Length: 319
Image: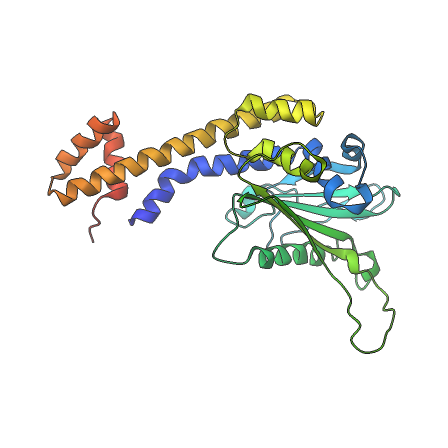
């Protein structure tokens, strides 16, 4: 077993728990309402408390598969109309990539709906362009509507979609709206259809919490959830006092869990770094693995079992 696999097995659990907690926290309706006010034109300037009522049902969090053929399911309401999204047991499609958060929003006219997807990223990926991924997601949000939100060739019934990406640990705070535009290259014709069906919103969060001010109002709220260096109490105080969001038990619990896991992940990383250095030095001086284990236990004040785990992670590989 190579070092990368061993590291993944031993460290992924806390990362996965942190990610799940972050999604549940971001999926609170009171938080989503603030995001909608700053990203969807129809809700601009509204009190987020009033926007909460436009979010239909409970958001689906990490349950709706992205893969073709699995995103939508037929759920009939009292009017025998196809509505909703895949709410089946997520274990049925274990291993599939899923939307982080997805939900319907009823517009102010009381009739039309839009579909919102929110994705949380700990940083901007380096192995692919994040906009390419966002385009794929928003395309799936549109194509999966067939036979769920529109039938056959009734393309005028396609619902507007937003894929909103919250990217943490960025160099600076930013907010970008990527959408379709029409360029008339030769002549002019008023083509029938809607250019606003396709929307990507990228929210960049700096590592440090921004100060108070209208420009960074959304960034400060999201920063209170995810920025570095804040205690659980400081986060909850900003959420409650500055944004008048009731601190329900679920929000308090998720903030506590994230803070504890974040600290645990940080401490684990520091300990692993020291362990790797001790092991490499031991090999350089020709120490036996038994001697290295003893040095690990003494210098890091850990058990023999933990020392053996570190030696398995960072020791010499045998074929």
